[in-house]
Image (cartoon, rainbow, N blue to C red):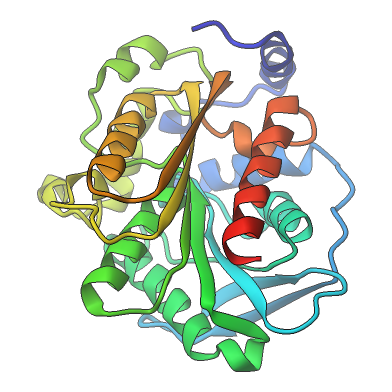
Length: 312
């Protein structure tokens, strides 16, 4: 239950930035703070073959996406549709640029990062609709994009992991698009919260605190009635049977750890080929802290290894 020394030292440095708890900010302020914190890292971008910003059609208008291609990729590529974290309220293509680059480079696959609509401007289920539409678009346009339609994965961290699981469920129940693999990085699975992990790690363990979930819920959902909808809280889905091969990455000191472990148990019980790796002494959002945190680098390498094996 103790933070690893390297991470604890990093969080001490972050404290000096004077960042405010997300729950004390407006959505616009929280977005600006997250962007500024990432910009302050001032790290050189990871080199990939090509990066292209474009817009694809979606149910609520064009969806901005950022497409990363590996250097020297021959023939149709495997592809990952990536959804960023941020409680369906904050986060952007920019805040998750480095992680997308790392997965593209290490796995040798195309990565399409999706700037889905967020609350409170666009409440649930707008993010779900955009996530599914983006995945279906890449599948339908695989040939033009140089992608093998049989080797498309979905993945994301936190809210992005939530959307990945929801897209997999929608694709299963709707007869497509085909999804070969899902990468779930400490996904939020039930916006109700209140599991034992909330008591253990609800304060003092990084940016996601027990008080943050109600803030996200208030800005993302239309009302508490949405909590019962598995598209908002996919941990409430009746069954995970028939879902694609899955890697679940979790952090020990994370308020979502309990619900994520429960998800892993259900995936395995429902016959889904699943591997789970829990990173001791890590917090929510650690995945995007590479190369500053060694375990973040290890988690990205692990994810890339599984992606390369499944769809590379």
